[in-house]
Structures are given as structure tokens and as C-alpha cells.
Image (cartoon, rainbow, N blue to C red; front, side, top):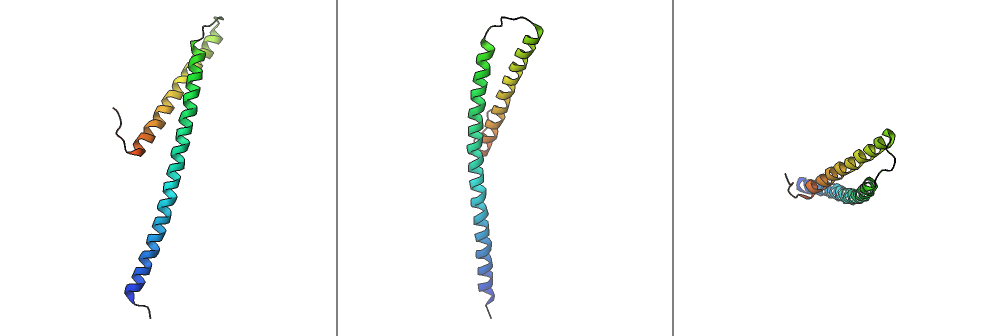
Length: 101
């Protein structure tokens, strides 16, 4: 019959192995998510710059419909900035850095 201490050691090794497996799995998931957030922030930054360039152009047609489209573009640009800032704050919090208040 197997001694009780050996049974406890085998159980602990099994639990430790399972824990290590899930820790690495979670770590790789976090690294992948961080890369995707970084890529998303780059895309948002380029779209923000593109919309800003469009908004800097003067209007040659002064209809309410054109003004409405320009206002919608401005709101979209501001929304992109807000989303990028929120994603950057989530990434900053996850890395352990202090938030600027």
C-alpha cells in the first residue's frame, strides 16, 4: 500500500502542475490581449489624425446637411479620442503604473 505522505506529495504535484499550466495559459492570453490593444490604439490614432485633417478643410458649401455631416465627423473624432484614452488607461492600469489624475 502507498504511504500517505507519498499520496499527499503526488496530489500536491498534480495540483501544482495544473496551476502552472493555467498560469501560463492566462499569461499568454494577457500578452496577446495587450498586443491587440496596442494595435487597436494605433488604428484609432491614425483614424483620429485622418478625421482631424478632414475637419481642418474649409467648407465651400454652407448647407445645413453639410454642417450636420461635419458635426457628426467631429463627434466621431472626439469619440475615437475618448475610446483610445480609455483603452490606454486600461493598459496602464494592467501594467501597474499609476494613473495621472
